[in-house]
Image (tube, rainbow, N blue to C red; front, side, top):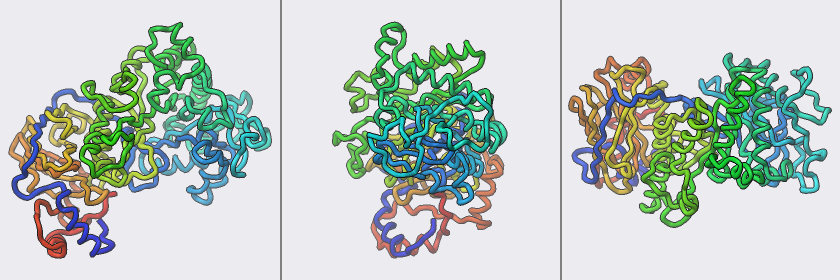
Length: 592
């Protein structure tokens, strides 16, 4: 943590002492019982659940996947890098994607994809690029397009998914057409294919059920179910012809209303009447893509791609309320993640008012996959529970990532412009010590007897039970919570990391922390209200991997230093507290 202003830090210490992770002495409040069984319910964790969208990719976050997608990508002209904001901002056509790329990349075709791949290569992340299927892309960077200039007009270039002719690495800017298979060929020849340093996955545009509203100048009519299937099959075949191992993500549905009837698509009622076995649009889409595979002899949809933004209301009755000082609103927010998986939970939203037939959503999606297109992976390429500037954001993000792991999600991408606390939670899973150490790659059984207060997720690496990583949340607004954790096996070492309301970053709480009591096969963790903890629990220090050993060496003064938080101190002047902090502890490098 870089201390830029000592006075500000001292004031923050005096205000926030009650909002920290560890405690001195005995805590009063709630108790939760957690049981870890490393030999039970093991499942591999896809690293790609720790992903972000491109808006966040250059932040200090150790993400494992990046998606270049969103409304603006639907009208992105890869040949010239012009794009259109659509309804997001006055249908403005401009050079938005050129603004954040290096000077020598700005005028190269496909600069958005080139930049995506550059960042992903540096981070060791999976690059997912959007392909344009709506029909037209921006022809210029000349500002607002009027209704009178809707496509087809000089303001737009026509999109063809298949060129049907020889590809060029220097696209023709005067033919009035942008070819999508030529784009894929260009990327493969420029960057390498999906297995050799290039783009790993391609998204079949973005939220096609909303094209008529987000891009009414490009696609004024409602998208039909038949249209998106036909375009999905055609585009996927074209990609696979060029890069057979690239993964296809589709159809990037915007949310619950698209899952059910494709946003009231004109042909949905007839499809449903002719196929009463389909519960919702997703069944139809998966079934059609499976039929296309059978006809073509190869898989044409690798990943079912959907977006999920909670519709749950705060106690105030508002969706996405920002009442972080209201315990009832916070309670609703922190438990809204349960709509992903918990059939005993009922959120307060229009979805439940309408029957909530498909909540919780992850089991419903998996059931459709298993029924209509087995083997298809699942991605949530847009989600955001908010809380960029409040520790609740970290709690919800940490919980969400555990839920994704528990439910076998293949890829997920946080989508927001600001995400300080959420990014800290991602780092908790991917880089908790600043040296690349992360949550294990194999989830194991971890149960809690009070999910409304505390959720917990445990992992090991491979089959090795010598080290457990355990993420635990305390969702209680005011109450300290004691977690009594049964580990099953004997362990001798525990190291605590965590996130609290003091700062949107990870804190290294050191080996010997009064919040942690380890006694063989059981561990007690004392948690302050609204916090996230990560415990690295090992049979001995030698059991830790090389990265964790590096972190341990740094804590002893061979590089980084640490700031264990001072907790449980009541009263006293801020100056005295700060003096104690600086006298006893060293400052840890900012993890965020």
